[in-house]
Length: 113
Image (cartoon, rainbow, N blue to C red; front, side, top):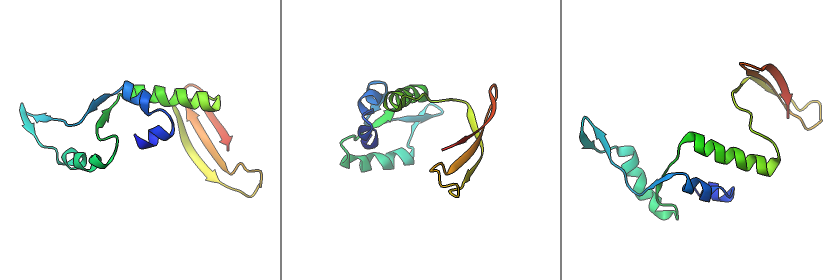
């Protein structure tokens, strides 16, 4: 959450998430202890955000994509796969990464940045 504060999206994430300071897990109708989370909770006491944030992935994607668009003026493009990538600074033009992208409906493209 501290990192999301730096991007000024923490408040919106919190508004769209379930916030918890503890949790319970059940298996076969009986409460069980999950060591991973039980060990994490005490370490979070040193943070201002000493709680668990549970947010659906589509909600967090919407928040991050909206912020990216407002900051950069560009949209996030989904369903593209990076097929290959190469780093080459020999051209000296500042575009050192070349990637081949693939999309099921839009085919393949090569981009440099």
